[in-house]
Image (cartoon, rainbow, N blue to C red):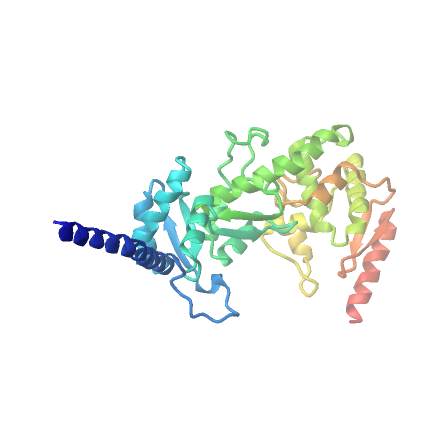
Length: 362
C-alpha cells in the first residue's frame, strides 16, 4: 500500500515537473505559428523597394463582413491566413466593440504585416486619385484632361456639366446652360470608387462655394453692379487675357472702362470660345474669324457673353472686383505674355503695327 502511494506521488511529481515544460513548448509553438501567419506574406523583396511597389488593389464592398474580408485578402495573396485574420479581428473586437471596417478600394501590400493591413482598412485609408484643374481651363479642356488621366470619357463629363445641381448649390445662377466658370481650379483628391463626373463636379463647385463665393459677398460694394454670373463671366475673360500676373489689375481696369463707356470688349478669347478654336502665335485669329457672328463674339456684340468662357482663378476673380484705376481702353498682346496698353484708338493702331513689325522680323 505504501509502495502504491509512493508510486502515485512520484508520478504526480513527474507530471507537475513536465507541465511547465509542456506549456512552454506549446506557447512557443503557438507564438511561432502566430508570428508566421500574421507576418508579411512576402519578405524576400529588395531593400530599395517600397510597399507600394508590391501593392495589390482590392475593393471591399459596403456591408462586407470581417470574415469575408480575410478570405478575400488571402485569395488575393495579401495575407497568409484568413484564420489568423479572424483571430486578430476578434481580438480587436474585444478591445473595441464598435469596430467597423471601411468599404472602399485599397492598395495593400503583402510585404506588410497583417496588423498593418487591418489598420488601413479600419482607418479607411482608401486609394485616392489626384487631379489638377488649371486656371483658365474651359469645360472642354477639363474633360480632355480627365479622360487622358483615365478617369472617364470626356463626353460624360461635358454632359454632366449641363445638369445644374441647384439642390446642392442653390446659389448657382438660374437658367445657366452649363457650369462653365464655376468649376473652381485647384488640386483635388477623390476616392477611386467614387470617381464619377458628378462627384468631381461637386468637389469643384464646393471649392467655389468655399473660396470664391465669399470673395463676391465681401466685395459687393466694389462689384460695379455686376451680379454673380456677370462677375464670373468677366473674370473668366480677365483670366484668359492675363498671362503675366502683374497686368491682371490693368486688364480688368481696361474691361471695366469699356463696359462703362458702352464699348465692345473686343476680347480674342471670347471669339475663340465661340468658334471652339485656340489661336497661337503661329496661327492667330483671322479677320474672317473675328467677323463670324456668335453670342460669344465680343468684337460684334456689346457687353458680356452669355456665359463664362473658362474657370477663373482667385486672382482674376479678385481683380475683377477691384480693377486698377486706369485711363487705358485698349491693349495689344506681344505674344510673350505681356501687352501694350493704350488710351486712344490711334495709340492702339500704332501698338498693333509695332507688334506686326516685330513678328515679321522674327
